[in-house]
Image 1: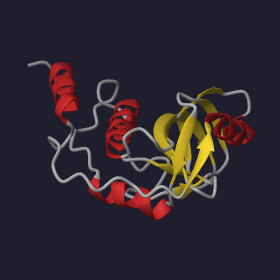
Image 2 (image 1 turned 90 degrees about the vertical axis):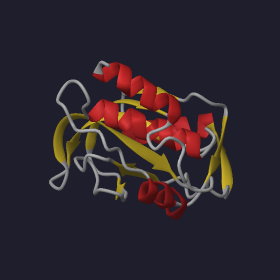
Image 3 (image 1 turned 180 degrees about the vertical axis):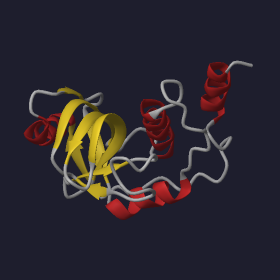
Amino acid sequence: MSELAGLVRQLGKGLCGGCNMPKPPKSLGKATGAQLRNLLRAGAGSATILITDKDYELTSLDEYRRFLKWYHDTHKYTWDDYDCDDFSWIMRAEALKWMHGKFPFGHIYASGLDIRYSFPNHGFCFVIDYHLEVYICDELEVAAPKDDFAETYPMQIYKLEV
């Protein structure tokens, strides 16, 4: 079986085959897609922003941390085959299943311009909590610490999707 076929099959049943997924997050508020677009536009400059839903539920960073504690991609990093964009898309897909697509768990392509996080074009994820604060997460530990979130920092953003 090709690596791509194995990945597609794995996506169909979830990375862990549907095992022990944590309870969905608690809703602590709501925001419209327009509100999220305005929030993201303030820090994204001329980047492409895709907001895919009209309304979103909001939750706490601790609720998102429950997902990060549970989630682990066991695939091996392979440059240009299973690399940062694949890791981040799969993480986002699992998060969307966990939250039934209701909460803002997004995908971003950016370059880090901060002394702590300096990197070229990279794909990773972000969340928006009920205080309308944006936090970054990255399974590969390039843009944020493993299994935790980083506050936003200076970066050149190319594309965001929620």
